[in-house]
Length: 111
Image (cartoon, one colour):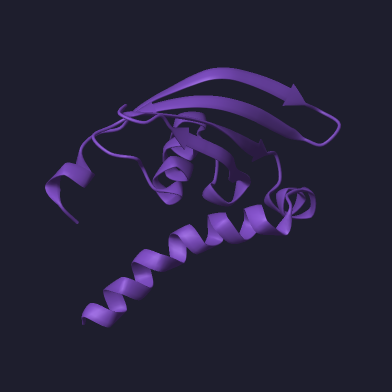
């Protein structure tokens, strides 16, 4: 991983909406860094910020404006990981799971 990718990401949680019926928190976030972070990095940052398990966090949307170093988006943090898999659409689950599988596969190919 290049040194510029290892730079600290500045994470700011803009708003939190609690949805007790579903058992989740809907988080609006803003992340500043030297480059657009991967979905896996965003998921990890939000899990650390909220002291949640990684499998409870699902990144729904993230956008980086042209010419900026700021990424804004929406994530859902569930009270129970199984509940998250029940409520999140399959394409969101695929995107979040795939984000963690890619680095491992690339590492194996390099060995």
